[in-house]
Length: 444
Image (cartoon, rainbow, N blue to C red; front, top):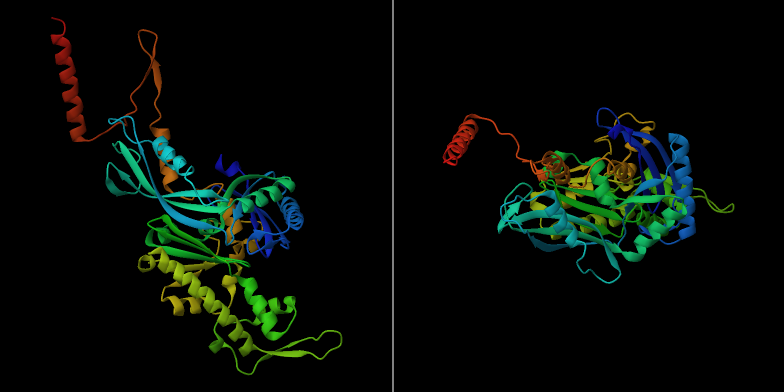
């Protein structure tokens, strides 16, 4: 049934609004059926600032995606970002009524749902509750407690909050575009789904998604999300710096950044210049590539230092065996990888969203700028925490069945899994002998 489902992801970004439609093929790879894109004019630093312009852009992107895929879209997974995003760690616990029974997924879900009721800052709502390690009867550092015996179940939770009004504005725009929201997902978590491998998450890795308005960070250790942060600087502020520093138009500054920009001024040629046409018959202006690179490097150094300080603040800097993975449209700037390596001392690679991609209608989605959109589609087929899959499978295999006894009552059959092996057979035979012996004596 998985390859019959079709999922759409809606990425409401500062520079573009993108809709990606996909489904899983027979090889468990994502097949992109269609892509729609529109210029985003109503979003600033990841926050919707103009409802009507955003609705118009969403509608345009959806219509293009429907035309390319041949699918009529009604439900979408939507990403959320912005400087209003905050994360914190909270501790919670429950006491189970039964001492003999084992911990079930329903117990874990009850503990997680309780964390959605904690008090947060005024004007904020919880969008994600991500469990860290569990504690069972004061036994700490348990990754998955399902199946264990215990009464007291506790855990530390990584809780992510967003501004209430920002969430409402997203929902309002999506609804006015004739769509419904299935899941609201933090954008760096979506990007991680499409870019990171399971080995990197287990080893320890930081994903840095450099967008137009914000730079998003997520840190994974032992396959678990440990830290998230949103830095309110992205590619647009570099364009603004070029516009002011070189005294050119906004669109000219963007072209200069994309075509000639370098994040290391030492790698820029000394004698090369770019000629910019003047306004209203004015003479053209010559821009030095070297000076352009100095402007870009100064701002990128600031962004790198902010990212690095967040990694240090997370407390996991020395555990990132997988280093840093750069993605997003801003990651394509020349020598950005080398600048990150020089400033952080960590291994760095550019993340392309082809980790789980199969055959697709468009190869453009393999660009890092579509990492969030691809991840939002993958979120319809995968989970943000791999432990959820195990817990669902466990619940299915241990689901109790029922039978009718001699008195016409419904009784629960044993849900014990069959065991094998030499010692298991001995225990089984011993149990049968004891039962037979008890039955013989009970006749007297």
